[in-house]
Amino acid sequence: MEYRFSDKLAALKPSAIREIFKSLTDPSIIAFAAGNPAADSFPVAEMAEISDEIYRTMPVKALQYGTTEGYLPLRQAIAARQREKFGIGRLPEDGLGFSDSTIIVSGGNQGIELACKVFCNEGDAVIAEDPSFIGALNAFRSNGAVTLGVPLLADGIDPAALEELLKREKRAKLLYLIPTFQNPAGITSTEENRRKVYALAAKYGIMILEDNPYGELRFAGDDVPTYKSMDTEGIVIYCSSFSKILSSGMRVGYVTAPEEVIQKLVVAKQVEDVHTNMFFQILVHKYMTERDFEGHIAEVRSIYRRKCGIMMDALDRYLPRELTFTRPQGGLFVWCTLPACIDMNEFVKEALARKVAVVPGSAFTPVAGAPCNSVRLSYSTATDDQIVTGARILGEVAEDLMKRA
Image 1 (tube, one colour):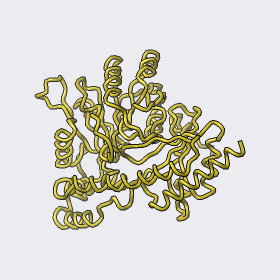
Image 2 (cartoon, helix red, strand yellow; image 1 turned 120 degrees about the vertical axis):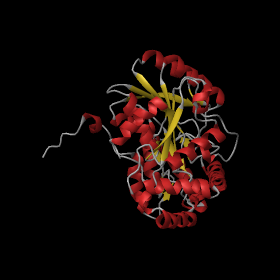
Image 3 (cartoon, one colour; image 1 turned 30 degrees about the horizontal axis):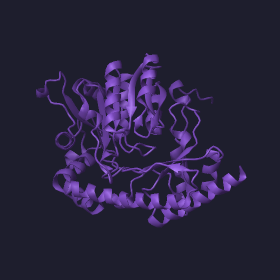
Image 4 (cartoon, one colour; image 1 turned 135 degrees about the vertical axis):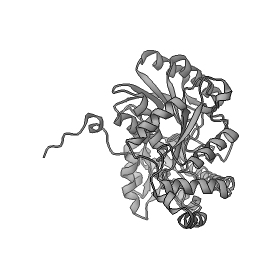
């Protein structure tokens, strides 16, 4: 049988990250490739208690169909917390001509995919930071959108290059941004950069899709206002999730956007999964409202503060000076750039042969096949000792490859 796959999916390749995951079944591999949260960040005992309570007191609600928009108490709790802590969510009384609403989605990536489905026709363009998150890029491509990149600088996406692209690209519908602890680069856009980019989006009539799954994980520096908190024109769709602060396996995320946009997202979600897992929606709500949610987040931040500090010290100690890397103030990722004399794919291959898994930077380019000589590292799942050992091995690989060059 000759399988004739759809044009939308025929050109998609398996995620390089997911392919590398297959090698991580070997316990001897030091996993700098995975973007998984640290195992000790899961509040297992409290979740077990809440789960037992749910099955004892409200089993039918937890096991029955729910509304597509999501469990109402959870939606209300998220919306209230966003307004109080982050200034996210416009109300009718704000007098801006629009109001925001929040819905629950099956992980933040579903919100990203739904936004593309709602706004993009076949052949429309989505502009992203270069580099950007492969899961989002594939979501856009699977919906027939063309992905275009704008260089990511130390303070955020390049506004001048963005405006040049907006002038040329008349079919640009979405501007996809991960402004806080960016995946894969680990950097955070400055407030000045965000305000420039927001002004450009408003000027050229393009929606901003703000992806913020790591924003709660700040362990150094000061918070920066989200795009959504700046939104006075109704042009920001805000996606986040509980994956990095409670559990990635629950697949509970949320989207906040103008009500008119939310209505379309709900219709699109209905044909995908009807609704997000009800049991875990209830569990998340109970954890948020009945347990020390803020205290838990503080503990998670401390885990990554320690792990990142160990990795920074180890990279400083072991990597040749010809290699450079970002110094994140939060999140999970470090972007390491190799000198021109080292072939990135060879570096990745040789590192894996020596039992250290990293992700090739080419996986994150919005334009497929674009040159890239960087790799992504994550400190989230490796033990403290593994971080030091892995950094030493990467330094040895780099030294060996430079000698051969």
